[in-house]
Amino acid sequence: MLASVGTAYLVMNAASIMDYVQALFSFFIAPLFGTVILGMLWRRATKAGGFWGLLAGTVASITMWAWVQRDSGALRYIALSPNAKPMAENLYRALWSWLVCVLVTITVSYATKPKSDAELEGLVYGATVIPHDGAMMVWQKPIFWAVVVATVFFILNLIFW
Image (cartoon, rainbow, N blue to C red; front, side, top):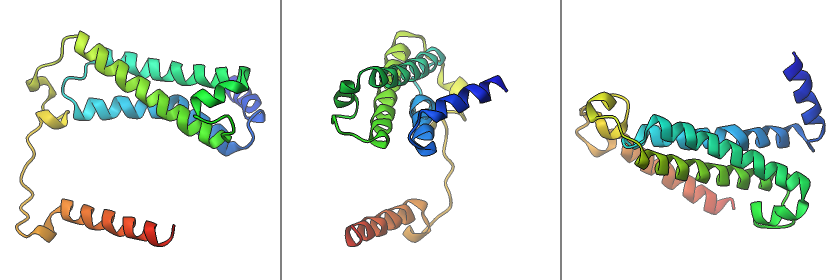
């Protein structure tokens, strides 16, 4: 209950609820995304790398937010423009926190001992045997339809830009 009351006072300072939600996204979700993607797709990632990367990304994002709150001139460094709106600031802060998370995760993972491929089997993409899906023709393969959908969205983007 106390956390809810405290959060309500934080929301009062936001221009809109969407700005507040995007700020929280940049604090927690963007670094978490970096940790999860590396953990799923890179077999060299370690527990220590994930922990320290997530922590560094979250702290970096909160620090950038506090810096802009204290000195509005810092916005030109975070959002690459002194005239950025809150949504752009949140987007760039999420990008920077994701990059910090990924870089720290990679650095710490290289400095620590990785798990063997046998321990990672079924958990990490590179250490898991992918069964054949039985598709014979090209249009039965998911990658074909992914390319079709991406092409259609690209064309629609050009038409409705």
